[in-house]
Amino acid sequence: MSLSTTQTAGIDIGKAYLDIALYPSGAALRLANDSEGHGRLLHWLIEHDIARVGLEASGGYERGVAEVLRDAGLEVALLQPRQVRAFAVFRLRRAKNDRLDAQLIAHCTAELDSVRSAPDPRLAPFAEHLRLIKQIEADLARSKTRNEAYRCPRLKRWLAQETTRLERRLKAELLLLTKTLSAAPDLLHRLTLIESVEGVGRRTALSLLILMPELGHLTRAEIASLAGLAPFDHESGKHCGQRRIAGGRHRVRRSLYAASLAASFRWNASLKALYQRLRVVAP
Image (cartoon, rainbow, N blue to C red; front, side):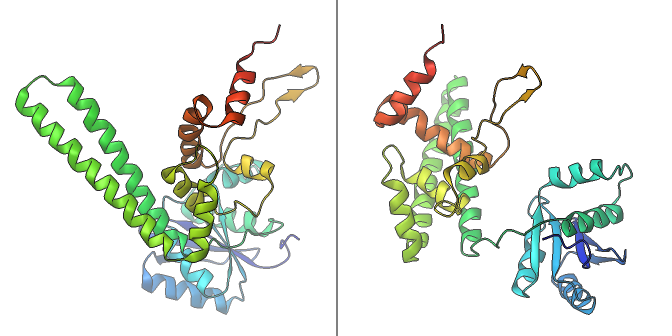
């Protein structure tokens, strides 16, 4: 049900500031993006009887204020930047600044039929830890690549030592993440269930559990779309274009690709059959 007749708030998130606007009244405010500013924001929203607030994902700068608003019982809609841009095109809005963006977000939020439930707050620190692990993996890959490109014995020794250090750190962080997560029986059960799929290892299972908490609550088609793996139609009139996958959660998609590629060659009979069928060229 649209809330277009009820006052909603939109917040344009910046590293230093929050620009807030209400729809349809147009009231606006700018506050610091810190704990004091969050407190003042909450008081201001309560004064204006706001129940729904829209935020645009902004590289993590939205996490603190989103947590404060959810803890206070407000309905928080986290919008994708492409949603806000598309709404601006629909409304024929060309001007852009922080204040106008906040008004646009508030209007867009008012038109939402529903707001997704808040994610499990326990997963936020796990997601941050997983991001560090991903960065260590990238550093490790670069270290190995550098080692192959050098000939100087001193530099090669140093690079080999750096590679060993990163491998140890990666193993330690994976063990620590698993141990911390396993303290919650329900999360451990879900992790074990995901790992029971042939070809899915611990690293992939952790990614799916932490980055795709909707598993088990949505249909397989919805999950495929959320992961950016659903091939969408590209047809118009007599034109029948090739279906393509796009968007979605790229970190989930990459983890699944790494696991499914090896499984389709060796371990998973269903994936092997699917892979061979897809390789067949139609006559």
